[in-house]
Image 1 (tube, rainbow, N blue to C red):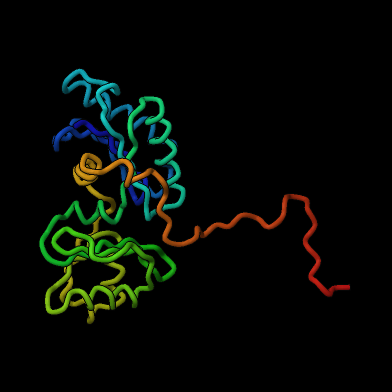
Image 2 (image 1 turned 45 degrees about the horizontal axis):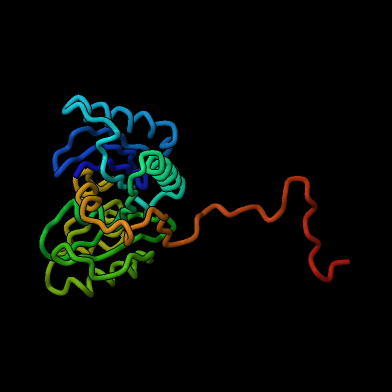
Length: 235
């Protein structure tokens, strides 16, 4: 199966073509913003690399996988809009991919793995896995609560923290997490996301954003030029 992967959820912008585990074309850049300007060209170039390998173009893509979060609110919207538009034009299924699951599957070790993303404001997005299987739901937790969750599941064994939130937790609780191993990743690996895309049931993995908390930005309460509401009881 040949899949096109689009990942704009975290600190990178990635487009890659993978067939049965072989990376045919990839473009990836670390970036905190600017995904909208770069994504189209990166998909074009990754597809061109794949075409040079075997002469196949967009018509050979079987599925499109796109990260749906948790992650950057703006980045998620860019990747999802592009993937859904391309899927509609090619008449191909678009698979929604959890960034936390992608981080965990990029490591694939035995034992306890905590996929952790720095959510700012003293929080992390976190999900725990044991022997590559999820054992908790994805959730947004305070640093203290996330540390408690990891230690409760780890018992006497060390845990592996993967993702941008790993160093944040280790710095916040150096004594409590002294036995934890930290493997910071800016984003899931293309190969891991491709594996998830190929194995997914499209009906169970829709390309809809996964928000674990409300966005930092909120819509205005009044239109430009509209007078402010008068507090009740004011004369």
